[in-house]
Image 1 (cartoon, rainbow, N blue to C red):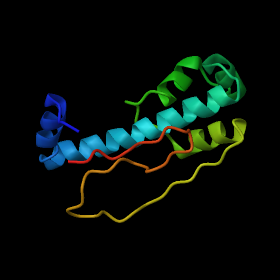
Image 2 (tube, rainbow, N blue to C red):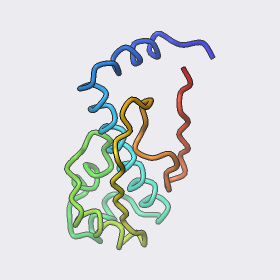
Image 3 (cartoon, rainbow, N blue to C red):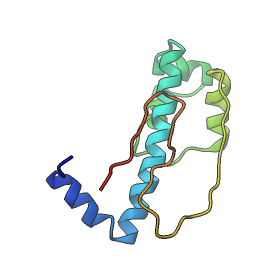
Length: 119
């Protein structure tokens, strides 16, 4: 597949270690946000309804489901998981130096399959 201008731009930006680190962390936050939103929707709840069950605000649920939000606490994730009949699992993995860029998860439980971009 032919590379787009964005593909070339991203490839160049990922050579910067600070940008590559930020990009990976953003992918992790994106995964958490998508999983929470998908679980909530699968349960048939609105953000407002979930907030009521958690005794918090709709704005807080919106933040949790925002890909840019990185303030997730383990206690809040556990509360969300309990209400949505799920469990929280945190995994630490050793860094793979010199490997190609990766996202937080290969397969996510929310049903969105990510594929690695071949260069």
